[in-house]
Image (tube, rainbow, N blue to C red; front, side, top):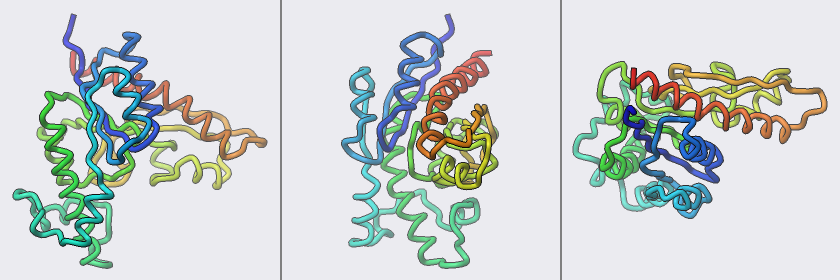
Length: 241
């Protein structure tokens, strides 16, 4: 039997997608093992789900880090290998020309938090990092330290819309407000933009005239729980073959 894919997971909340992946691993429907679950928010339900499954957990509190940076400054806390010009040249998340000081603060504080995250993640021998409801954008500083081989994407994300339509934080809400008759979800790899990376898989559902936004979200979540494990298995088979 081939070795199982070694997966790390990051969450920010309840962890329902994490639970779907845990269940799929336990059922043997994906050839993967979850090594850890990290969160940027302390005390969330997803951490309990991981602990119940015997998975290592940790927290890197982004809000606390950003708050302390506002009070104490950032430059003395930056990682030694951080290069602002390099990150600014690669990133597609903020308009540095519009407010350079604000953009620099954003990229610096994220790098400080991401360095703390990397300290925890890189302690594991991980094949794939799965964002299972992780609500923080990742900058090139972080991405380049996970995707160390050019063209080899190792960070996977799920988005609540049929990309490239409706990127951003409210995919189901945007789909519903636009009046779409079909909604869906997308699993994709992370790149330097927001929800712009290569698409791995998608699932769609019909939106009825009587559906509310809550109905759309419920339909979408059911599809997410099917799609994410399937895409992880697809990745596992690609690596094995």
